[in-house]
Image 1 (cartoon, one colour):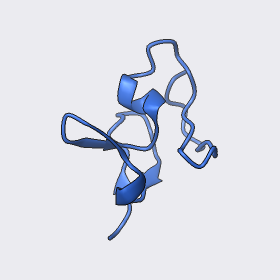
Image 2 (tube, one colour):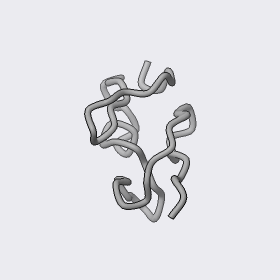
Image 3 (cartoon, helix red, strand yellow):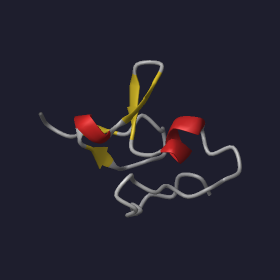
Image 4 (cartoon, helix red, strand yellow):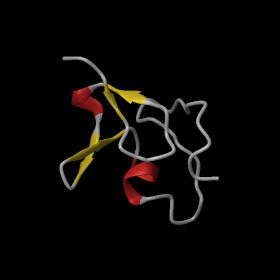
Amino acid sequence: MAPLPCACPSCSCLVPAGEAVVRNNLSYCCEACANGHPNHEPCHAASGAGCDCACGS
């Protein structure tokens, strides 16, 4: 299955479907994105790697 774009509007990550954090039928690359970055925390994928996007800032 092809990677999916993260549903966070300002995120540029692609996430493998099996590793996505799913909320309201939308796929996110990490919990921070799925939660909407309430404390402006950076994006960190489940693998522990961050992406180059500025979401959360």
